[in-house]
Image (cartoon, rainbow, N blue to C red; front, side, top):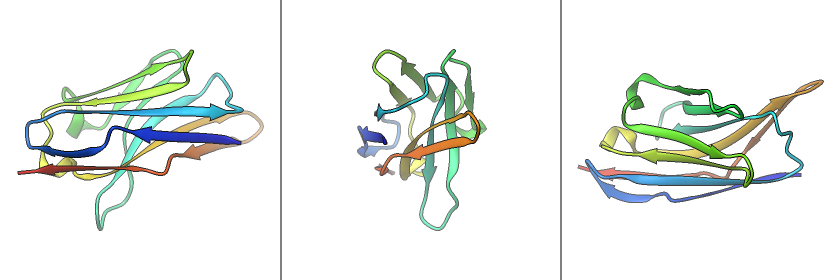
Length: 118
């Protein structure tokens, strides 16, 4: 069984910063992609950023130059450093890990709330 435990969410004023962490435990294939998604009220869940084991990264346009995703392959942990936060960043943020062998494996955390006040 694979478990993902997120931390670091909270309430912050516009222009502030937060750092999210997600520890992945269990039977995890090493060649995986870790990512952060978010879902705002009334909106679909969207990919914010992802990072491969080799640290290739991908970001949605709205967070480029503000958010940084990183990972520690030894500790199976992924981070999301968020700066210059705006109220539009308010959402529940979900950690994800996935890999493909004979089929795709896809696991999610429980989510952590990020609220940015104006």
